[in-house]
Length: 608
Image 1 (cartoon, rainbow, N blue to C red):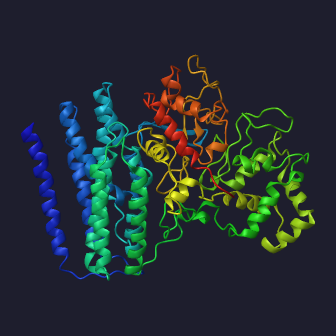
Image 2: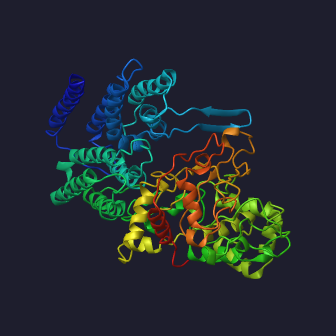
Image 3: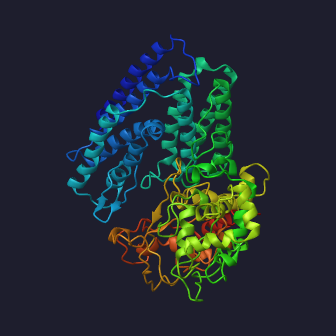
């Protein structure tokens, strides 16, 4: 075994030696930065890309069913290390392969239409980790299926890479996205659920970031800025090295390292005289993860939508609260989405026009703009589309879109506003856009937690900070409720909203549980593997949005935490074959659950 470990070390050193020689040769050439031409550093970065790919490939090819388990585990860890060094570049330049290689151990169902439904078994590093380190014995055939996919896929990625015509701004954005990914997903245990190896793997990410910046050393106009950057990354790595997954202070890490690094990215962009793209979901100049400026809100609206202005927001708010726009003239959007309840209604199930409960709980509209699908079952593609679903529903607005827009057109007050804001076009598209614009404005990021993260105050208690750290780590809440929105839209691209099957019960009686029978995503395609799946809601303003879950089954946050702590439906003995929540108990102590609740209550916004 000692000789085996020595061989791994020698190969690693050899790869480093070869690459270092190439890097040293590259330093002899003076290279400049340009905002309008291809980066002169593409060759160096491509060489590093190949190094990480080849190293990951070398070790994954050593994994074999003929090896002992311990040898396969060692080769896996070496390959995984190099994959993590590769990850910042893969996210930037080959995102689809990043999703494939790093996907969770969950069945993926792709649906194009009723005749084209694909059910894809996962094949990724996460799956291999669970197979090699899980308690259950995995058949060799299944193990081979996963590692063979990686053995074939990595060379394919190398052959079909895209690092040719990248600009310097693309490489800088790559670094920025990597920093965001580490803070919002990397340190949560999202992609190392079995080993909880996230802090060490974040170090591998940062080592690559540091290496890429080092390639640009001679191109910095301000050498002090370059030194500040290296000092920050070194301090960051030291913080991660000293950390333990369960007790790591993620609050301080994000506040004093992540945000500091975003500030340095802005300074580097100015030093290099490059401008990062503004046509992305994240604002390129934001220096705080927990601020409204973090997102580029325009990119979460349909293409060619009118600008989000105070005047359009005010018009949308008036329409949102106008009962006369419904068929019977008795309800408005605000009937089920009450501002004082963070745009929920306080009922277990929403109440329909006939006074009878509807199928599901009224979800909050706070921060809904940053979701990519709408309704619990995801049947709405955008906010404007969601409004169509409400107006046409006979139990909600019970009105067709033509009559809906005619009611607006016949109101003199609205007519004046539409003349000014929509060139007089009072049609259903513009009416829906106005309402959607108001909903898009419901993102103040001014909760107690946000203001502390923004350094506007220093009022968080030790219990509240502990709660955040547990939420982001040991309790695994943030592996589904991603910061900073704390719902299911996945960083760092924020272009996909996740759905989960928790095995939610009909009642809060966990000793005699009964599985809720709402089919969720099962319809309309009737795919059994999607039964019981629902969109992940935000925990922002959760103090105001009881009762909880799609069926309003839990009246208190204590019940919610107990359900998760027991392992969801499977954990309490229910038959939930496609549950995405791990069924193993979290083993949180009472004081830890109280701390998580205390943290979640700090996410209550102060005003709208």
